[in-house]
Length: 341
Image (cartoon, rainbow, N blue to C red; front, side, top):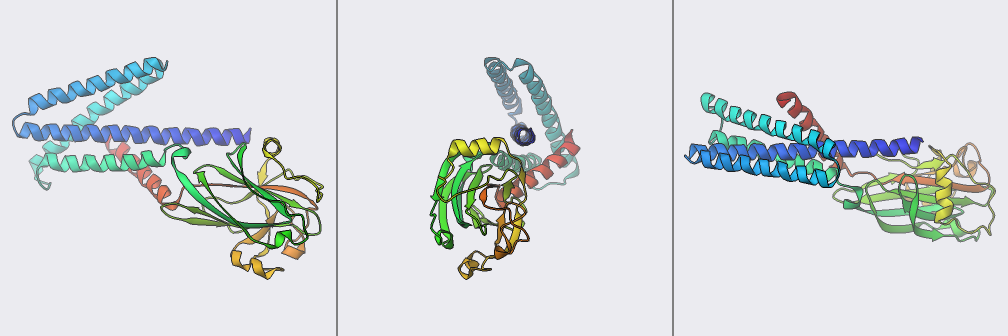
């Protein structure tokens, strides 16, 4: 139930931001049209352009009415259209008032209408940035580079908060030295996806160690055992035990069944990468992690969970640039509502 609630909250927030961004975009465009109309009036042809502008606006509303009927959302669309028409009217009055005030006080550069047009373009730019931020996750690809190792074997999956859909990689080397190499996997994901790692411990000691880099306009790296401001590795509260060397790697149905019956918690954190086995120092500042209470003192933990299979997950999150765009848009929305509404 908690996972479902989190997913619903995420979708509601995404819809609210997208709606506000679309409203701001429409209002910015409307203010630009009004500013353009005022400019035409100043040139002596305002009456014709103004009438045409309002005909275009009414035609657009009529098309929205038709789309709403086709989607059988008449009641909801009617409310939104009413708010849109009211907002357009306020934007028209507000922009016209701004132009009149600037003309009276002389506090502007260029013509008053040009100044209003520049302000409208600023609104449109911020709105477009917000719309980009609020696009569905499939529209925002991310390149993931995962450097990792597990004592003893592992399989990597890609999915969402409630299931996996793709097997990314498998290292099911059951030899005694199978865990001693660092594997590198590069694959594509989308913002909001989840990376899942199944790690199997055959006994004596256990750990999971990884650096995960999300690449785009700006790159960010998540290290196991090191707190990241936006996303961190979690471990399933259901720990499967015991495990044996001849156990086959879990497949997609196995993992989905596991996800449906588990909660999530923070993993136990052990020593810095390189402790016990020096070649792993290349993954610093990552630290060893495992299902609580840990993977024995051999990897720097204070406890040992025992032989078994642990399930870890990490969410692919917006890059810092996207978060900056989102925060900028939210600040502007707050200012706009205080000034206009």
